[in-house]
Length: 363
Image 1 (cartoon, one colour):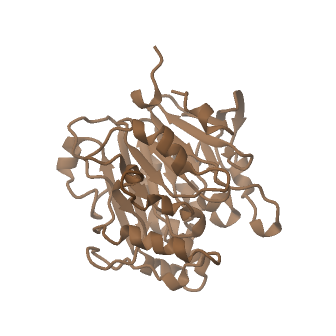
Image 2 (spheres, one colour; image 1 turned 180 degrees about the vertical axis):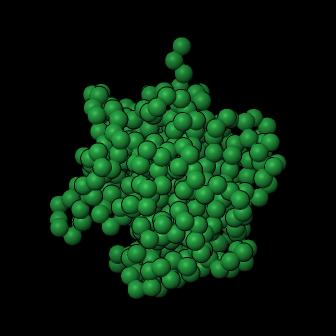
């Protein structure tokens, strides 16, 4: 008997083709959903696909259909579809999450100052409305930023995820002059593990700020959830307060890195030597690049290392039904990407297809 994706104990990770931008959805073995970033394009809106095909089949957590929506940072290519989150009674409540998590300018509830310098967030002309919606959505949310507080009695062995970031005022010290680097540097970083398989989503974080996280320097904040009730009782504040959670460097060294979502869309400016030095086996197994086809010189260049043995161990992937060996995969040719963590085996399953509907039947 073949089970549907929502009936299995697998993790399903969708990286949607949104051009240069980012939209990632994680369905956990508990059949809960985590959405990271809200990129979209003129041709495809991940939110509409999720609302029609994925979210209605998820199990609720404390009454919420999504356990968390994370926005890495407020650059336009990561929040283009943010208006879809505006609650409209009877229509958009599917997208109201238990946690809405993003860099912010609130002052009450944070242990340390975390206020964004909005004067240094540079977006294309005409993006003001996006930023206003971004601010409105967290206006009534309580700090601090968190991962999920796990309260269910059902545990899933070896299922955990963590949130790491450097507080924006400290990022200002790291990038005092370059506004683009400041905006990218405040990105929220997610580490996710299920069994033998791990995922790192660093947003557009700069190498300098990522090094700050890896070395646990000034301004670091950590949140961590292990999907086990006994562990939650032993560490009741791991989800909401920086303490003795494992460091990102420790996690990468212990478990290795199966899938790296390339920082800053795989551009040369985002490559981190320190990240690679921290990884068990010295590199990820596969790099995923969310980017558009480069037509102009100002579009920047993909770092060549991601596409070679220097940037990944490499693995076999399925591209429109054909098995091919790759060091990296990309959305540049119009592909959506589905990664399946089964928790066992050396490598996860990776599928690419230009039709996301074709990927729905995989389990």
